[in-house]
Image (cartoon, rainbow, N blue to C red; front, side):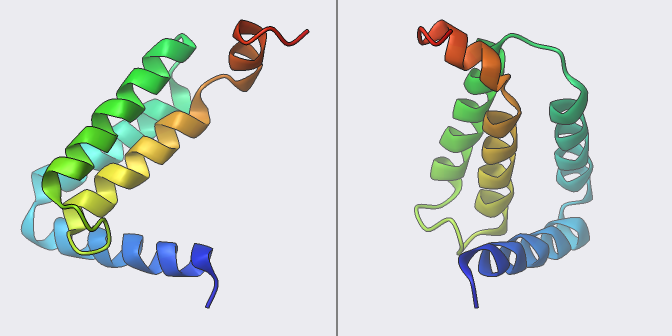
Length: 96
């Protein structure tokens, strides 16, 4: 089993658990995913939001695969970090 499929399995399991027991958190998770997809924000805003989600995941659980909320926060952090405008990041670091 590859790392990606293992990660997907943990995320799917976490989503099922949170949707069942924490429906408001599940809806907030869905809204944040959508916002990351459509937001037109500066790079700093994307990275700051990713850092907030990383901090929330660390607060929830030191082992990210052991707590469904930590898994969701880690997924949101990855999503926000990946959605940061890469050209803008490269330009700020001195690339042409």
